[in-house]
Length: 271
Image (cartoon, rainbow, N blue to C red; front, side, top):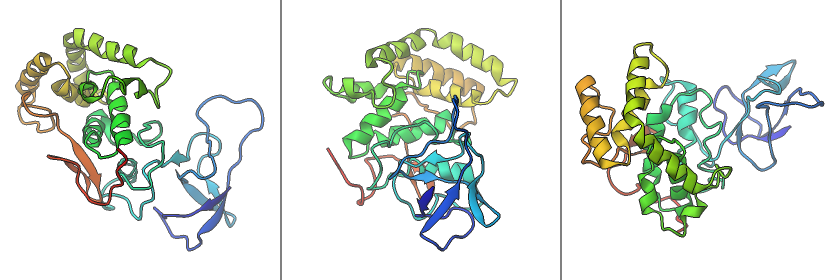
């Protein structure tokens, strides 16, 4: 592949155009393999081999799409993990972001953010001036299937049918109903998650935090009381239940709290 270099994240490369080689089978295949298209931004982890760049993992997924636009650096600094910085960059909105912005598939290959942190970023994007960004964030929150879908009420009824850009195998109405079913069994899920917490199951703490931002106000109040009873010193939660759910915006300083409207004057708005 001939690749145009916009940003070197590790190492050095003075040339604007480079060739990257990949070995792949030509027969029938299945699974998550590398797939690239002209005119799309990607992260290419590559190594130098006999004077040539070669992808670090032939065939199986090692090339990741970048939807958020052109950047001149990663968020945060080198004291933080590379995959955390890359995952944050995926939500650092730029004016030339692609139409795929909002797609969550392959945006966090190192699982560095977690559901709680992602939910806060998506809630920040609900305040973005671009309607397409707001709709994508709402769709992603709905498809967490943990009743994080309070944005449904802010979307005009005629626009709700468009909350299917990335998850169009399911009807929007059925996803909304799935979230209501989660609310009906929320207490049982909470109890199951609490039991798993003792085994340090990955994501358990994030799952508990999400209970403090469920759409139903009565349930949210109940889970805030439960959460604070068990984790009184934890500051990563949606309590008190009377407050807006926490939201963040990604900047060069990482994901920082967004307490009011969307910040910055260099965002292109398409209402």
